[in-house]
Length: 297
Picture 1 (cartoon, rainbow, N blue to C red):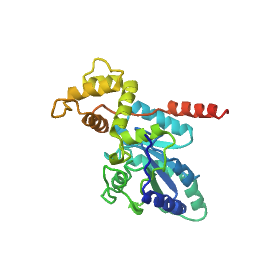
Picture 2: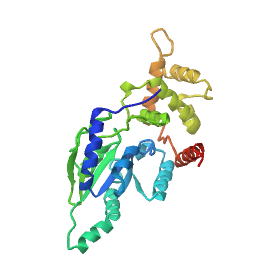
Picture 3: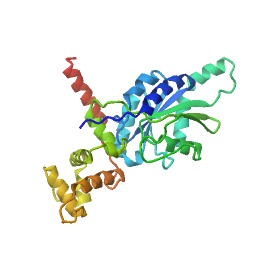
Picture 4: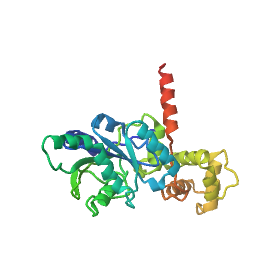
C-alpha cells in the first residue's frame, strides 16, 4: 500500500511558511510524542534551515513516558531542545516560553547592546503535520479559543498571528505533510495515530500493522486487552479471536473483519491499550546505519 496525501492548500502553506520565515525568531516544531521521528516533516528542515527551534513532543500523555525521555535525550544530543507537552491538558506550557527565552538570549542581548532597552515579544512560528495539535496548543497558550480545532487532519488552512501575553506572538500555519512517503512504515505510523484522514486509507492494512507492532513491543497489553492466552502467528486468526471476544459479528454470526479492524485502531487512539510509542531513537540510528551500508559508506 502506497500512502500519499498532499492537498493543494499544503503546497500553498509551504510557500507561505518560507515567505514568513524572516519575520520570526524561533520555530516551534510540533510532533506527535507517539511517533517523534515519523511525525517530523523532512521539508521543515529544508524550509527553516538555521532558525532556532524547539521540538515540542505533543500528546505526551498518550506516549510511553520512558521512551519519551529517550527522545528528549536524542534531540538534545543533536543540539535541539525538546519538551514533552500535552496541549489538551496544558502540561508544559510554561517551559515553552522559558526555553524560547534561553534559545534567543544571545539575539536579545545583541539588541540590548544596540540600545534596545526592552526587546519586543518573541515571534514564533508553529509548524507541524496535520492533527499534531497546533490549534489546541495555541488556544492553551493564549488561554482562550482563538484557533479553530478539530480531531481530524486539515482543519487549519490559513495563517494567523496570535498574541500570548506580552512575551510571545505566535504565527500558526496549516499542517504540512510531504507529498510521498519514501518509507511506507512512516505512512503506516501516521495513519494509525490519526495524522491522515481515514477515508483515504485501507483500514485492514493499518490494523494489521498495529497488531504486529503490539505483538512485538507491547504483547502483554495485547493479551490483556483481548483476553488472549497466546498471540496467534496468523494475523487472520488473531483478528478472528478479537472479533469473537468483542462481538464484532455479522447478522449471520460470522466475524466482521471490517469492524474488528476499526475496533483495533479506535482502541489504540483512545488509549484503551495504554500509552504507546511506535518508534525508539535506536531504531532510527539503526536505519541510518543500514542506509549508509547500502550506499557503501
